[in-house]
Image 1 (cartoon, rainbow, N blue to C red):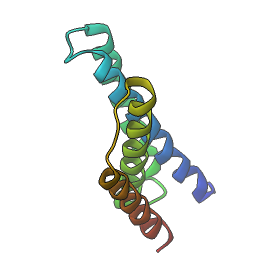
Image 2: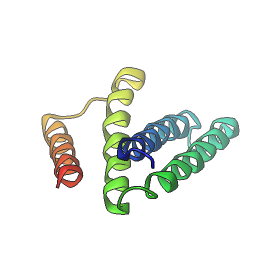
Image 3: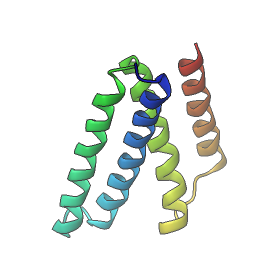
Length: 108
């Protein structure tokens, strides 16, 4: 029997891979830099492979919400530090709502 926490971990890893894919996509400059574009595609495939593992132990809606929230937060924070992109306060409020929704889904 596998611990339910491992499925949560699979969903979080899927989200982290999604962040990496988003960053690689940005670096690809609209896939003009093909190497970064290929890396981006491979990372998306890896993210969904981890999502497949996550849904073996949790509902798809919860696993995908965890992936999405991790991806949204990670991309926003990474874009801030790596590319100097800033969110407005309403953007941060939206991120907090997404986080709250995932917490409710996961604990409910």
